[in-house]
Amino acid sequence: MRNVLASLLLLGAASFAHAQATFKCGWTTYKTAAIIHEYTYSYTYSDSFKLYLADSSKTFIAPDSAATLTVSSPYRDNSKCLLANYYNAKKKVIKSEEYKDALIQVTKEYKYDDKNRKVMATEDNRQTNGNFKKTYDYNAEKNGDMVINEVSYYNGRKEFYTKTYIDKNNQKYKEVRLNDNNKDIVHVENFTYNQAGKLKERSVYFPEFKVTKKFPEPGGDLPAKCFRSQPLNISDKPVLHARVSFLKKVLNKNSATLLDPECHEFEYRFFSSDCEVIISTTKTNNVKQVIFRYKEKF
Image (cartoon, rainbow, N blue to C red):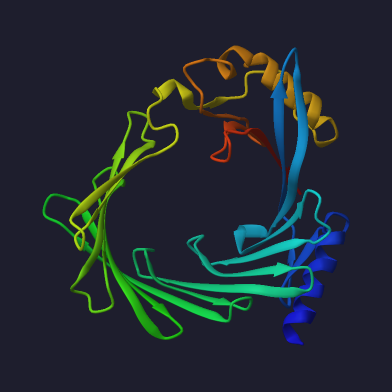
């Protein structure tokens, strides 16, 4: 009953937060410092760009980012998905609650050490009746690399151990999975990146079969020019009610870049102080999409 009531409060707050400049997470009412509006469109191009709305969401942000509430409205779905996040003083998520309509689906909690590194994560999944827990400890190597030791539990029982190796550039280059006795290796996975820092290939060694399998990653063979971030290059001011025309101007302004035959996959980020436009391909059938994020401050 408590969870149902809490989720109803979330739904009610989401409906009227703009007018009241407040929102509820659980039983607490927060002032709204800002709202981030996000719209995702798929698009096609023939003689001009045509946009098709895929989904949208609003994220309500409390002062000092103490909590956020994201209300998502998937396209062609009458349900509402809500995500409530609660943060510590160092802006790290300490708890999250996922709702679908009036029912809580998943609750996650996190703990951190004095260096603000995650040391424990738990998940209570009401849909599967599964309870997950992971613990982490960190060991610095003499060469400056970091090894993260992870223990994974399911419904109170140890499932597996993982050793993750991070280099000086904070990139994961190796992962070793061991079974629940922390001795027998299940597999060893290595990661290779391209010049743009995008994952290029994964190779997995299975000691039981003495076999290595390689998995090329989408876009891993592309030049750095296909992935970049830069300020918005049109003079129009972004506004919510005219976002489609605004996006078309951004797309048209950068059409030569978007149609570059060398970039069959890409991600371009254009930004200003209160707006972000991300144009990219997706891993699903190479669909092209554009995301419009607009920050409304109070």
